[in-house]
Length: 261
Image 1 (cartoon, helix red, strand yellow):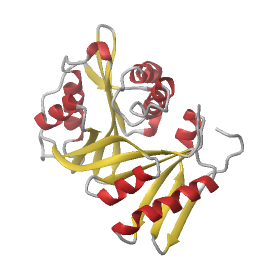
Image 2 (cartoon, rainbow, N blue to C red):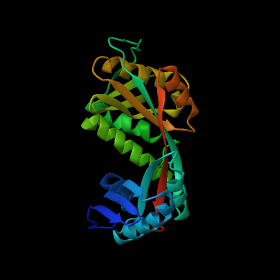
Image 3 (cartoon, rainbow, N blue to C red):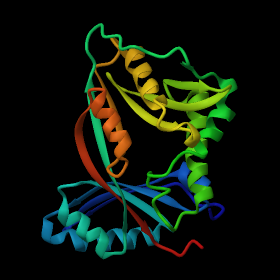
């Protein structure tokens, strides 16, 4: 990231619509480029979405942004088309699932699942850094595998060290085989990150972790949310098996403003 780059939040109101752009310091530091999230993007009409994306791109250039990302509902076809027209890459279809928490339910859990402590932070982070494939960072060919791994690793390390409400770990053969981080969202819980070491996948560890989270938050949360990519068929099958229902479907776009090579 360029030294001295200030953080920013820019709200723009135009005849063709409005948008809000927010600097992302975590991603900027790890990717070593200036990153921003398009918080809101509201064209005045479908016909003016293209005009608004051109204005957005101009503002991002002015702010010195290298990469901006935006997530729109799958039904917003005019917005998706407009982002693609200015060079944005669709890097994922994110499907969010929700499960209603039943009063007093206690699904069976596995004794090999426990709560991560600060002492587990490095081992859990290293495992997570080797385990992701489908997320938006790994799906963008312009982001190196090393940096994509680093984003997930540091994210989980921060989760174990206090960013998340709870981090569950499952162990096998004397090592961490998987981990799941949960974050509070008012009266709800979100599975913020879940990963299983590649050598331990397809052996039920992800199911053990999700069941442990459901068990732990029974009576404490109203609903539990989780997101995964549409192409991650095993995860979708798992969540459906455990009583989750499809809630939303969104497309994530990455818009690079400069060559970062």
